[in-house]
Image (cartoon, rainbow, N blue to C red; front, side, top):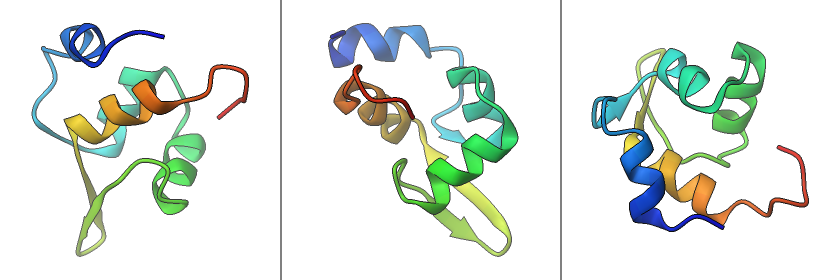
Length: 72
């Protein structure tokens, strides 16, 4: 499993606060999967009005803690 520093380096070009489109690009997933991860709180997030804001470190923690034997 990759370390946090190694994973965070992969995403250095992304802003510190992400939107759903950003996490789709980062993880290579579709819109429905991105919203499912957010709504199931698998990726920590903040909802402001109708918009989800995701701190970049939450995506990094999600990846660092993900069990590679289980699908998303």
